[in-house]
Length: 384
Ligand code: NAD
Ligand code: GLY
Image (cartoon, rainbow, N blue to C red):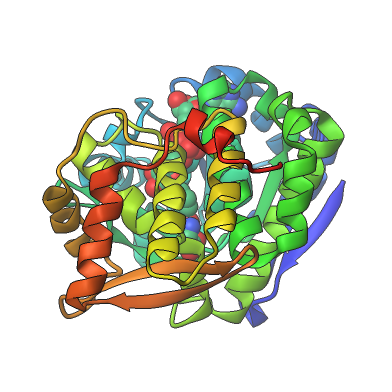
C-alpha cells in the first residue's frame, strides 16, 4: 500500500492506494476506524456498485477496533449521471433525517464520481457539514473526483452547478475494484490520467506513451503507478489552491469543451471522461490554431488519446454556435469572457481569456472542423 497526503493544514488527509484493501477487512477496517466518528454512518452507493463491494466495506466497518455500536445505514442511488440531481440529493438528506443521523455521523461514498459528488455535497450540507470518507471504485474517481473536495449535483442548465468545496477525511483506493469496471468506464478514467501528463508533467506523459498498451490492459503495476502519480499531482495542485483561485484551474483542461459537449449531448450520453478526452483534443487543436502550442505536440496529445481507444471527436455533428452558447454557461465563464486552459508545451498549461474576434473565429473553426479523426492523427507522422 502507498500513502499520499493532501496537505491542507487542519483539513489535511491521507490517500491510501493498495490492491485488495477492501477485500482484506482487517486492513480496510484498520485504515477507516481512525476516521469514523460517533456511532452512526451511512454508506452511499448505487445499484451497480453495492452488489459488488458493499459487503466487503461492511466487513471492514465491523472489524474489532471499529466502534462496536456503529450503526451502518445504506442509501443506494440508481446508476448514472442522470441521477446526480438535486432531487436525489434531497432524498439522501430526507433519509438521514428520517434515520435520525446526528452531527457526529459519517457519510461514506462507495462508487464512482457520481456517487462521490452527490454524497460529498450531502455531507457538506447535512447539519452544516458532517464527516465524509471517499471509497472510489472507478478509475476516474480514484485519480480525480475523490481527491480535492469538489462536490456537486447537476442542474438542467449546467453541469455541477450546485455544490460545495468539502474535503473528505480520507480516501481509500482499492485498485482491485477496477477489475469489474467496464472497458468504456475504465477508458473514461484514463482520460483524466492522460490529462495530468499534459497539464503538469511532461515526463509522466512520456511514460504514459511508453506504457499505453499495458495501461489499457490494466497491468497492475503500471495501473498502480498511474493512479499514484495522478493522485500525487492532484494533491499538489489542490494543496496549492484548494478553492480554485488560480493554479487549480489547470485541472479543468479539456473541461470547457467537455462540459459543453456533455450538456448538449444530454447527461449520461457521453461519459464525463469521454467528453474530457474530446475536450482535450479540441483544446490542443485550439491552442495550436492560436499559435500557442506546436502542431506536432497537439498531434501527440490527439494520437495518445486515440490510441488508448478514447474518442477524439463528438460522434454527432454539434453546431459550433450551440457549443459556444453552452460554454458561456460554464462556471469558467466570467463576465461574458470565455476562459480556456490551453497548453504551451506538454506538461505546461495556462488559463487564457478568449474574447477577441480572431480568437472566437479560431474557436469556431476548432469546433466546426471537428477534431482530427483517429486515423488522421495516427497518419500525421506522430511517433508515440
Ligand atoms: P460513474 O460514477 O457514473 O461510474 C461509471 C460507471 O461505473 C457507473 O455505471 C457505475 O455504477 C460503475 N461502477 C463504478 N464502480 C464500478 C466497479 N468497480 N465495477 C463496475 N462498475 C462500477 O462515473 P465516473 O466516471 O466515476 O464519474 C463521473 C462523475 O464524476 C461526473 O459526474 C463528473 O462530473 C464527476 N467528476 C467530479 C470531479 C470532482 O473533482 N469532484 C472530477 C471529475 C469528475
Ligand atoms: N476535476 C477538477 C478539480 O478537481 O478541480
